[in-house]
Amino acid sequence: MGFHDRFTGREHTPAEADVRAIVEITAANELDVLAPNVGLAERHGPDLYRLFARSRELLSAPGRTGQAACDET
Image (tube, rainbow, N blue to C red):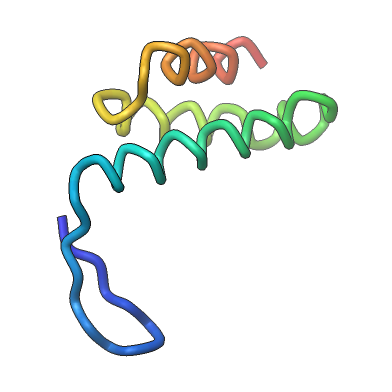
């Protein structure tokens, strides 16, 4: 999986552990934002669920539990 650095223009392929960490922290941050805000959760929860579902194999077991919480909104 390659990434394009928009600042340097370079292509970079991060280590799998780094990709997993980015996906994990992204999922946790998004859930932290949605948890106290029902309106945001209703509006964005389904889209985030689809995003996390596509990334499921990169999430830890607790991360996958958080993904399920998105589906409940």
